[in-house]
Amino acid sequence: MTEDRDGLRTLSLFDEEAVPVLDGTLQWVPVRRRLGIRAFGTNAYRAAHAGDLVVEEHVESQGHEELYLVVRGRARFDLGEVVEAAAGELVFLPDPDLRRRAVALDDDTVVFAVGGWAGRPYQPLPWEPVFLAQEQMRRGDWAGAAETLQREAGEHEASPPVLYHLARCHAQTGEHDRALDELRRAVADRPDLLAAAAEEEALAPLRGLEGWPGG
Image (cartoon, rainbow, N blue to C red):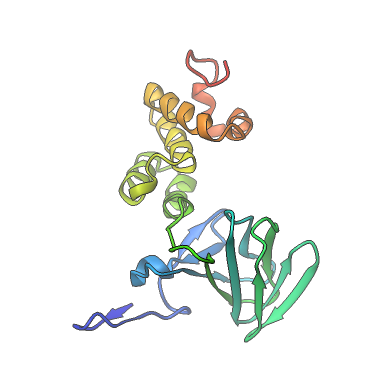
């Protein structure tokens, strides 16, 4: 990324350093964060090999619309129906509840995404700090991941996704009381996380302890 003295910034979707997420094969380019964009959400995703995810499986928050542009290569979008898109083609998803994912059909596929809510200002979402910490968690650097989450969460420090992953980190660093508190707070706002917690390997040191939510 480059920046001049007037604040003009440029970034290459092909060459900008990416953040490995999920299993490490999905390469996230945090465009909004890197360029300091506040008016709308925008990110890019790269897949080195055909068959790799280029958009993770997810749904969006209420009212959030999303537009995908295939910049390089080809991608297969699974949207309840299958849509294949080549470079230069757009896929617009106005329904936030539509479960979506995309897989690269070519090596070095790049997908650019833009999203936001109709009629309301853009707000950063808590998945961003979680993605930033994922590579550290995947490597087992739990203390480093907790530091990243706390540093990057900002206004989302008390959101259920951030608290849940902080609990995973602190369970692994031996801070069990702190981890239990974070997990209880996460589950209080998102009861569905309790089922995930029951199966989460990183939270195994907490199971059976006094204070486990629902125990």
